[in-house]
Length: 88
Image (cartoon, rainbow, N blue to C red; front, top):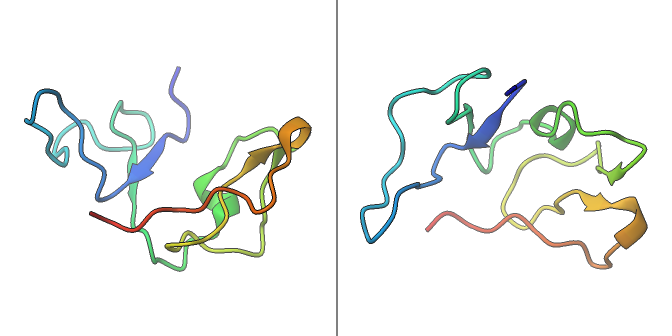
């Protein structure tokens, strides 16, 4: 079941060179998720709602911006953490 599903608003899906930004099935309970724009003031804790904090390190003080730290597994802490890539 998809619950609180989110995706980058600029994320493209598809195969064989036919990648495109989805325009249908967008929403928290749909396969393409709620759009979240990179560079927005949206907190990482909002973007990653439902992630188990016993398993994931999520810096709740950060926003979903290019270069911001992505969540990491607590058993595989990475320093520096992988970062949010810029839109293409």
